[in-house]
Image (cartoon, rainbow, N blue to C red; front, side):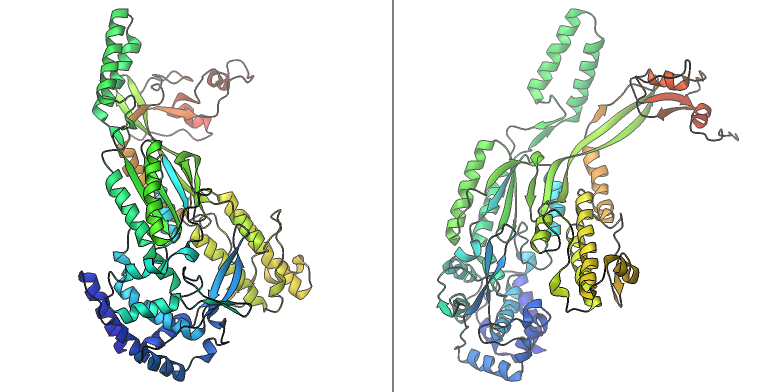
Length: 594
C-alpha cells in the first residue's frame, strides 16, 4: 500500500529530529488508510458493539470508505455523539463509557495511525507507560522491583475523574507543538466536542475525553505531558549527591578498632580507642558502612495513564514542595488531586500500584569462607531488596465478576449456558493465562495466586455441570480435573509457572548476587570452626566439616550421646570430620584414593 510507505516516511523524519508536520491532513484522503484501520480494529471485542446509528463491523464496505474520503476532502466530516453506558469499577462505583459509531471508530483509528508516526514510543518520557506501544504494567513492576529498595518514601497519587475533567485547550496546545496543520487540529476538536447521548438526550462535552473511544487514551496522554514535565523537573532538581554515603575503607577501620576495643583490658587504651571510633564516625558519618547521606536527595516517578507514584529519599517535609509542583502542573490540564486518596507511605510498609504489591524488606544474603592461621572464618554479605507481590483486591474482582462468592467459594456463570463446551473451557483458560502473564514478575504471593487458580478451575467445572445439568464428579470424569475439549484445555498449574520463577532466575538473581552483594560490606556472622572433631577428636584441618541441624538445646538425651553434645551448643552447627559426618548422615565413609 502507498499509504504504508508514507506512514513509514513520516515516522522516519520525525525520529531524526524536529520536523514540522504541516500537511498531514492529506493522508486522510487515501482509502487504503481506512482499510488498514479496519483490519486492526475488526478483531477487537467491541467491534460488534453498535453506536447510536446501530452499525457495527458487518456494515463496513467500500461505499462507507468512499463517503468518508469524500467528506474529508471537503473538510466536512462530523463525528456523531457517542452512546453512553456504564461499567462497574473495582471500588463499586460506576465508570461511564462512550461508545462511538463504527464509522467514527474507523476514522479515529486512521487518525491514531498518523499520530503514532509523529509521537514515536521511543520519544515518549521514560517514566510514562500507559497506552504506549512496547510498554506495559509488568515492565513497571520489574523496574519498581529494583527501585523500591533505594527510596524511603512513596507518594501514591490519585487524580479525580481525570478523563472527564481534562481540558480540550490543554490537548490542543500540546498537539500544536508538533502538528502545524490546523485542519487536523480542528478534526480532533470536533471529535472532542461530539458529545454523547444518554436515554435519548444529547449532552454536549466542553471538557474531558470520553473513555471508550480509540483516540481517547492518546489524547489524554498529550494533556498529561504537563504532568510529565513536572516529573522531569523534579527528577532533574531533586536528584543530587549520593543518597547513601559508603566507604569500605573506613568501615573496615571501624571494625578493627571495635575489635581491639573488646580485647583491650587497660582503661586508658579503651578510652583512646573509643575516641578514635568517635572521630571516624564524626568525620565520615559512617556508624554503618551504608548510611543515609543528609545532603543527598533522590527522586523517581512512574505514571500509567492517570495512576502515578513518586519515590523520594530525603527529609519528609520536602515532600510538601513536591506535591505543590505536581498540583500546579495538574491545574494546567484541568485535573485536580484527590487529597483523600493521595497518601505518603514508607516503602518498607508496602504499597499497591497497578494491581501489584511492593515492599522493601526482602532479605538476601550469601555466606563466604576464608582460611586464616586461626582456622576457617565465616563472613556474610547482607542486602535488603524490594519485592513484588499480588494485590489482595484481585479476589474482590473475581467476586464482583461472579466467579466466586464473598467467601471465595467458586460458583458457575449462568450466562455461559448457551456456549459450547470448548468455548467455555477456552474462556476460562484465557483468563488464567492473562492473569499468569500479568503477575509473572512477582516473587511473592504463591498462596494467593494458587487460590485464584482454584477459583477459576472449579468455576469452569461448575459452569460445565450447570450447562449439562449434571454433577461436578461426572464432569471431571468426562473432561478431567483440568477440563479439555477439542483444541481447548484449561492449563495445569505448575510450581515453575505460578509466579514466573524462570523470569526471576533469569532477570533478578544475576543482578542480586553480582551487583547488590558486590557493593555490600562483609559482616562477621559467627565464630570460627572448631579445631577438632567433637566426636573422635580428629585435628586434620582438611577433613573438618560443619554439621548443621536444628537446635537441640533443652531436650533430654541418653548420657554421652552425640545429640547431647550437640544440644549443649548454642549454635545450630558443630565440627565433625568427614568420617563422622558421613556416619551421622548414614552414608558410607569416603575413601581417599591418593
